[in-house]
Amino acid sequence: MDKYKDKITFSKLEILCMIVLIVLFVTGGIFIVSLATQNQKALNLKNEANSLIEASKIAYNHYSLLNNTEYIVTSNDGESKGMCITLEGLVNNDFTTKTYDNWDGYIVIEEKDNNLLYSIWLTNQEYVIDGYESSKIDSLKFNKGITKYSDEKFAYNVRKEFTSPSSDKGGTGKEYSTKCLSEKIE
Image (cartoon, rainbow, N blue to C red; front, side, top):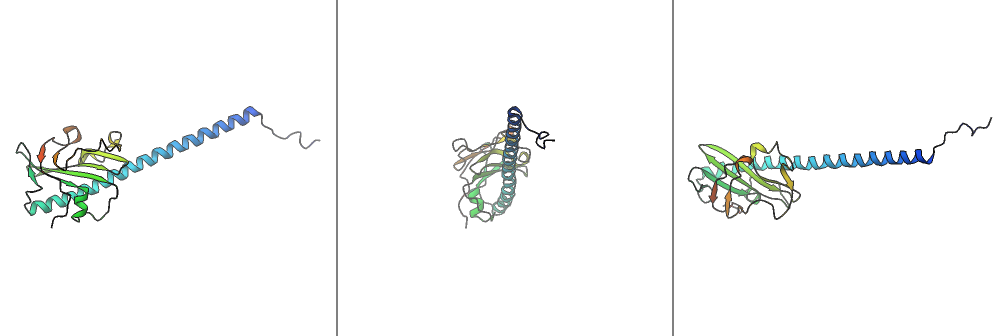
């Protein structure tokens, strides 16, 4: 009996089918890893936003106790008070110890009837949270509040005048005229 007679062989079509299946599995794996990485980056941005909102709460309470009217101002309609603090302002005034290289952001704080709203614009130069109130941060989805970074689309120029987010983002839309706190206050 010939020992090679019962040997299993593959036709060219079977080999081609196996190659196609392997390519499909690899492509699917790459897509899943890419999606998981994107979701993790968005989650990291949301976690950082929540951390910065907590730091801004401390900052607002600090400046409220000092009765700071340079940065805590009344809205244009006179119904509420507000403050804008930049990411740089939080770092410069030691409200956060983390350094944020290549990040940019603003937190707008609104106070009405002793209720506080904290809204944030934040970018890590890859993704953006564009003016959402703190209670909405955790539920933000990619492309539903977290968008790709584009320098021209990032936030409003709130360093000179700031406006709280619109009501669909959890804010009141109130306008405040003052500068954003970014430098060190002695």
